[in-house]
Image (cartoon, rainbow over all chains, first blue to last red; front, side, top):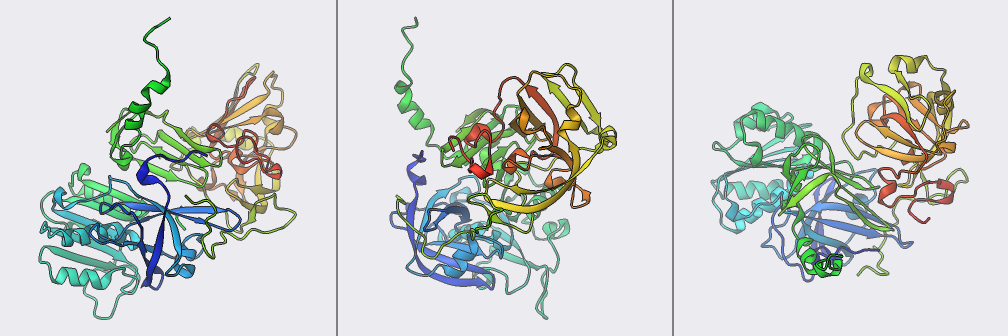
Length: 247
Length: 84
Length: 201
């Protein structure tokens, strides 16, 4: 069987060094990948699992860690009828080896030198590649204006909620807007509906931002359409859809 | 007979240079409607049988890739060129 | 790199033994959707079905003509090359035998073509003799677009990629033309009981 010869795309092993719940349904995996040559914020890796009888299953996961971090962080949302995600969230533990290849993708990526202003829109675990960008922006000391609009079902299902709050509190040019679509805490003052045009208009940075949109396909398509409708330059909107092929 | 004709091996170096680019950053021209877009901006349909990359404007199948025990199959029929 | 590597504790989808299941298949209750493109939505007043190619006279039916043809109820097991099988699926549609009635042809192959550009190839004898249909209903309801509606080819004795969704016609040919997946390493015939998934199986 042919192997992809691109040296960066060879399969390699990472070792799980830590796992912790990101939400009740999602887990954060921290990997040590020997020889990792670094990545750009926004890139992803392919993960391949092999059963004893040789059966293999493969999925893609965005990297949530900043390029400056020496560990690779993935956030895996558990799909109940999935094949790969329940293994990664329920079975995998520190010390296990995980076969992966990457980093992959250069289109949906941001480096501090690319500038801004930035407008990030995320749905659910679609926060992962945008979190890598937000962390990279902080680590690189970038002060370009950055607005994040993040849609989650509830506060407890908001991935990276505390870290985002802390980053926003210590950085005047980073603004984080949450919308909670299913349930809200009693004192909730944020949005409580699906992302719509009015919401996008209210939270978008003012001048011609570079927009990154990541989440489930319907969210990404509706947000991209609304942004164009609001006059955003389609060439400055980058999208990454999380299809139902995951699992 | 054309004396300038060489073995394909002679362009191994050139092809080796070509096939290591970051593909999502390359521009692909749709062979059907002429739309030029970065590969990262096209529409991808990833299935367990194979992956189809389609033109965001006309849905033409630009790139088809099957990865199965017989190898990787790469069909670029829908792309008139890639620029990178 | 990965030679001999096993992901500790990973079993993959449970594989079952059931004599109704071809080798390597597992049972599903739902109806998985596998889409290699956007779901076409051809209005019924623009839909037609044609028999073309190596025939004495091409045939064409509008949606209305098609509904007037004698239909059959079909209950069969279906098997996807991605290893799921679904037992006892219920369909309604028109037998290809009905469509080919009175057609004179020297063809030995058919290429099914579809909205969205998908194709799949089959031997003519595998779509005749009461083994293949153009199905427009599933479980007593009009076939949903995501499952191939308004109409799909149904050839349940072969892997399900042969049962082309959104089918619009059959081209009869004297030579074999590998279809969308058949030209990318998937088996030209695709018999699930002989586990013909890939070239050379």
